[in-house]
Image 1 (tube, rainbow, N blue to C red):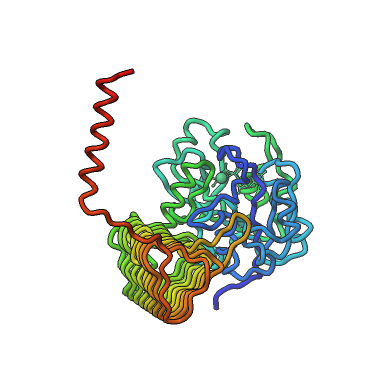
Image 2: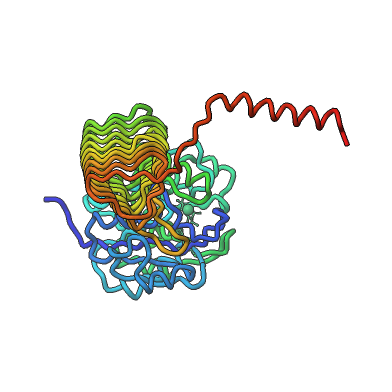
Length: 460
Ligand code: UD1
Ligand code: MG
């Protein structure tokens, strides 16, 4: 029978993130559209812990109090680390919430967003099977700079972690790194934390020092080697870009696995919540922001940009189209190049093939918007609604000045500026009448030439 024990999680999110050089707290920076903190909470939540405790810094205290931190719904308690005295000091801020808890406590760093529920669950299960009191995650890398180095004893169990700043040249040459996440039997955790000393280069209380303290106390330690791809930490913008690249690879692999063709996968940017149906083809350089769902059998042409959009089956979009928040495109809609859509519903079979802006609008089934159609939705103060009936035909370059409604089957002449409602089946044309003058062009040019000659000869 597999061993089991209650599990608690502490997530450290109080660091200043100095190396990011940002006005924003590090753990709120996003990767694949989700803040780093929320990635870690998500991975931890999958373990269904008894307690999920979050340690925040003063910068995010107000957000925490309002419950608005990303992913905070899953958090059962939180505390503030008012003074940043290091990772060990940060974990100690969970004492009030967790000292009575049983089982094990998993410490996660909120700047380590690639870790998965599955990897954490394996680490917990292996540690329980081993009977260790403390387990830490490790990874091997040829580029260990910035990470703590793990010292193993003859039996391969960790006896200490040495931070890079405190390491000797020999220790620095070690390639086994501390991945940051640590699992400690709760009964000994706060005791060990109480023994931490700030006698190191940073003058901080290091969480990593609990390893040596555990050994001194005769406790059993364990190193769990994970892939570096699961443990990469974000300290700088370059690290953030590396983590983004990893998440993009994962997300692309998942959509392809679900039956989506990505013609040039490395050029497609997905979001943590992007949903794409099977047999949809995504051409190069397509970008997905948050809240996008695409149906089956669609074609998303090169260079298109999506956020907050819901797209049905068999829809063709782009190249170079932009769907913004509140776009809803039903089955078989066609949206062509240089078309922007915002808070608009295009019913089945509607078409906006080129150069169009559809904002705050309802477009009926099979309606056709000619090139250059604009819904003039904004008067400088308020946004107004445009309604276009089923089967309506809007001529090229029409300006529909909202609020306005075009009836079913109605026709709007090219270049019309429509400021009043148009009844079903009516035709409206508002452009100025044409004036045609036969042979006038040559007469006009001659007149211009005469004027020019007079200026050049006469002078003044
Ligand atoms: C830490 C580890 C290092 C490990 C690396 C893995 C320590 C001393 N070092 O280094 O061994 O290889 O992570 O990525 O733990 N934090 C607080 N309060 C603080 C300081 C930090 O909450 O006072 C939080 C940060 O928000 C961050 C996490 O703890 O989420 C780790 O802190 P960071 O400064 O990034 O530690 P590293 O230098 O990366
Ligand atoms: Mg870090």
